[in-house]
Length: 295
Image 1 (cartoon, rainbow, N blue to C red):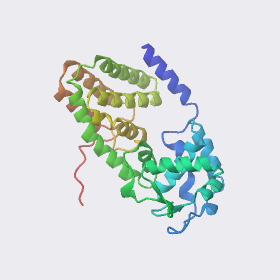
Image 2 (cartoon, helix red, strand yellow):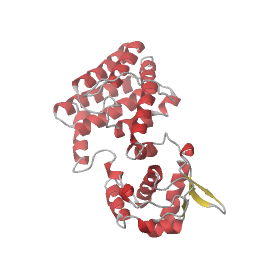
Image 3 (spheres, rainbow, N blue to C red):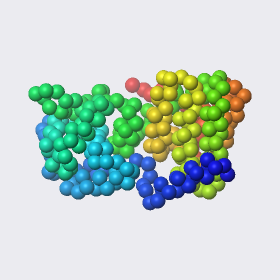
Image 4 (cartoon, rainbow, N blue to C red):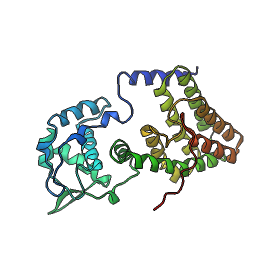
């Protein structure tokens, strides 16, 4: 086993000490909160009184501060629909509800505004914005949607995006002599192989995510590279048959290896074909390219 593989697997095992699966750490019990009037102010008092403290403990295990934890909680409540469009968000009420300072609330709302989830205007205050205004490519919003009521739509949309992005990235990557990054891709395949042999699903998943992100970098297309976070988010939230390589299996590993071989020989067509085969795989079922949806 290479030094890189040993280091990555050791780090993964340390990080996996009792933690939940991807997304679980940030799933707060907003769905169980009583229904609220969609046009009035948030009924913070009617929600679970332990929500804020429970959320802080869970998110804290990933190293988030109070600011990041409040962003997570409010973001998930907005994406879930518990805080509906045009809902007013009063900073004082939020601070009291989640037992955080004005500064924490203010900075959290600024982050949510940057993501397109809320808007703040003079004489109007801060309000939740409609879905059409959200930055749906933001990794946080991708995660929140994937573990909320919109999970099926989110995973389908991510699958379709990957079918668009990754085969093209594989073809382009074969035309660039980035030996350092190509070696890194080979290292990731080695790590995945060792992880699969040891039944280490966490390390396999991390190396898999790194592989796909690196591949987009090798393509040397800055606009595609800007989308690498989407691919990483897709792998992190995958869990159904709409995604292909989120679980360790021999066939998926072999296709990763074929991609590396095609890159080494500069065969763009072979790299693209191997990526399409990889995206078609699933441990339990085979899928074809997503069919056009009826409107």
